[in-house]
Each structure stands twice: as C-alpha cells, then as structure tokens.
Length: 152
Image 1 (tube, one colour):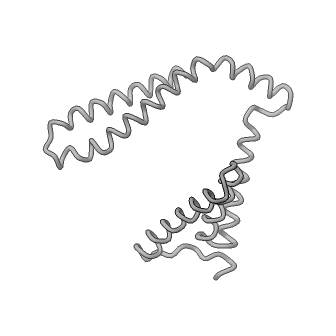
Image 2: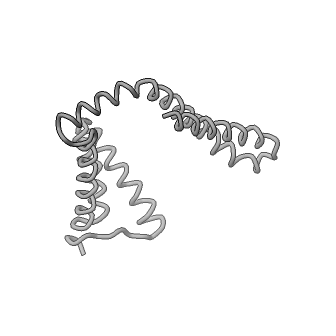
Image 3: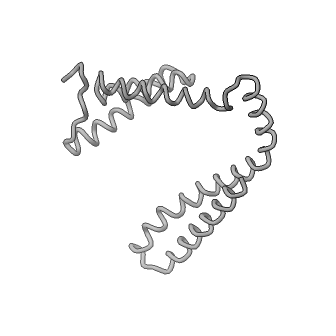
C-alpha cells in the first residue's frame, strides 16, 4: 500500500507542475494541459486519499481475508472474480447471438437490475447508452456493428 501512496503522490505532483507550467503559454497552447490536468488532479487526489485510508485499514482486511480463505478453501475475492468472468462471458455470448446493439442494451439493463437499480432507471440508462452508441457509430461514422446470428 505504501507504493500506491507514493506513486499517486508523484503523479499528483507531476500533474500540478503540468498545470502550473501550462499557465505560461498562450490560450490555445495551454488549453489541452488544463482540460486534461485539472480533472486528472481531482481524480488522482481521490485515489491518493483512498490509498491512505486503505493503508490504515489493511491489517483488518488481511485478517478477514485469511479467515475467508481458511473457512472456504478459496482465496478471498474468488466469488467476485467468478462473477465478473460470468458477466463478461454472458456479454460475449449475447453479442455473438443477438448482435452488438441488442447485447449492449440487454447487458446494461440486466447489470443495473442485478445491482438493484429501479426498472425505470435501468431502462433509461440502457436506452441512453444504446442511443448514443447507435448515433455516434452507426449514423455518424457509418460504421455498423456486428448484427449477430439471429439478424444476419
């Protein structure tokens, strides 16, 4: 954990220097470093704080992980890992069968419902993501997605 804190602090220092030095440039030349640097500073500051907090509670987590491994015979986190692998495998299979557009719509909807989002929120988010992808890639860039076995 100490390495995470040190690495995050170094990246934060680099980003702050990048933003400070970019202020000396003309507007157009400093625009990119400011647009990238300022949000990155905020994000890496969050990572740094979380790394510091995690380093303090690491001993408690290590004890809980050892207890989990001892009682089940599997390393701690194996349920999460197998769950993620199952979601990815299901998504790939859905793309193969139903096509990319329908797979994204169904995957996002089912994932949100599984994590206890409301029906309305799940439907709106899934439809919004699909509409954005369809608009950008299929209409805007004229680059259709794989139609799947059912629709080819």
